[in-house]
Length: 150
Length: 150
Image 1: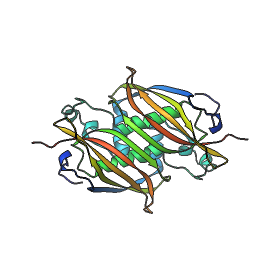
Image 2 (image 1 turned 60 degrees about the vertical axis):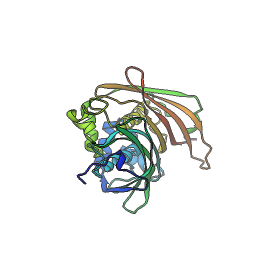
Image 3 (image 1 turned 90 degrees about the horizontal axis):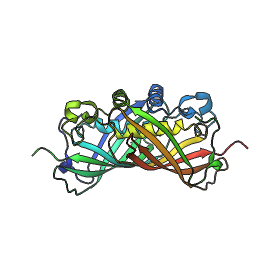
Image 4 (image 1 turned 120 degrees about the vertical axis):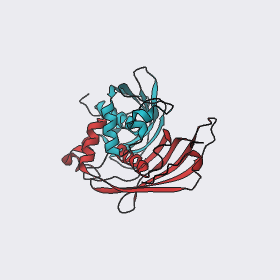
């Protein structure tokens, strides 16, 4: 984790940040099923999962996305500047299986102009890759960020 | 929960499903911070949250989305037919505060044509509303669904 927070005016298109790897284990999938309420057997039942094209249990897509947000936090520079996630566009490219390790890449895509004097929007390209460096999730996030202390 | 599963060929545009309400409590937010790894103080630190435009702790956007997927499961008709979430477009319309109750509405937006004989894609409009019937999350999900047993 870096100590120095990054604020809206410190960002420019092309800046790239990364974090991870983080392991997603079977217990994480179970915990996510409980917390979200999504007990779809593809994520919870080995025997059922064997009948699907994946042939075994896969992590919930929303868990992969949630882990990506945790990795964004782990970059360590946004925790005091992010005011809100405005929107997300997410494509689930490949399944994540128990004990896969995922890593995040965030690239500043564009910087918005905002009427607010104290905050602004930034769009990021998001890429989550597994231990084989294959893309499992891609998309864009628009975050509302504080401007720094004057 | 309904017993009868709904398969790809049972869906048509305009069909509407709903589930909830579900309460999102402070413990859910803490659990989500641990599971995702997103410990942003807006979600975990009352004193810090008081300095933000929200003035108090708000639930992670990805938690709200995760709860929406759990409510989709709770509709009770997709658990054996959903093979994968292909993509999501999500707009976080309003904050969710601890002890808010959220309800889900899913509307079939369109049905894809697919080359696979055993599955197909369906796009859903997604709306999550709080106890005041105000929209907190909107978007679209594209799901890959099994065709039913012949």
